[in-house]
Picture 1 (tube, rainbow, N blue to C red):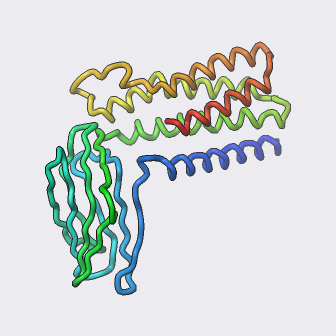
Picture 2 (cartoon, rainbow, N blue to C red):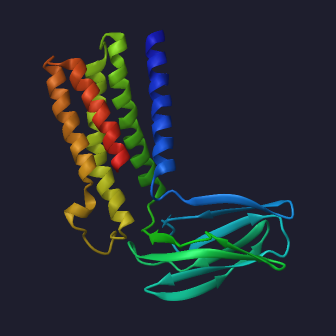
Picture 3 (cartoon, rainbow, N blue to C red):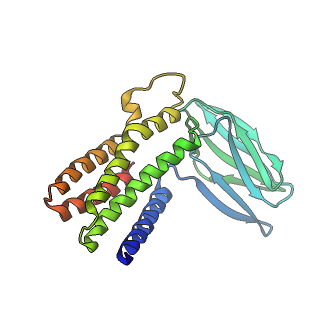
Length: 249
């Protein structure tokens, strides 16, 4: 029992670290930062994707009174400016929502007294709009994906407990990835593409190739393990490839 608890806790910690590394190195990870003006902090977050129902809202957090700014954005090579308005702690502005898959390029310009701050200093940030995904779908997608990753790590660690429950864990992992790939991810993508009650997306737009590979890998691997062939090698291979494909998503 003690071994099982240790192995489960280890699996959760490993997957947490994997998720953290994946998110922090993802191409869609927002640009964030903090700098000082007269000893007070100014914090910003420039998103690269938006799933909002209506407009995209950008907020600059600061306790500085008199801080002004505008958001310079362009779509189809046409430049626009949107002024920030003061809120309780900082300033905010809104950009109109576009259709799913469309994008804009933008940057923030702040002014305080005679000083001007451009964020980022060079280039522009690309913001891509996607359809709003309901919380239940988002939660189910998260649970199935990270539940599957936990099972992948847990299966590989089961070798330290003589593979006592390996078959059961393989079936659970296989079920999680099948449900994610066949049911939840297509629904997730339907909302992301803004297709719900509007149109029927192409099947290739709904299915994620990497998820299909992971699902097939688990189905085949489970069959092999139930036949008691190359158990340790197959388990480690499936777990390693699953984690690798997750980083490629």
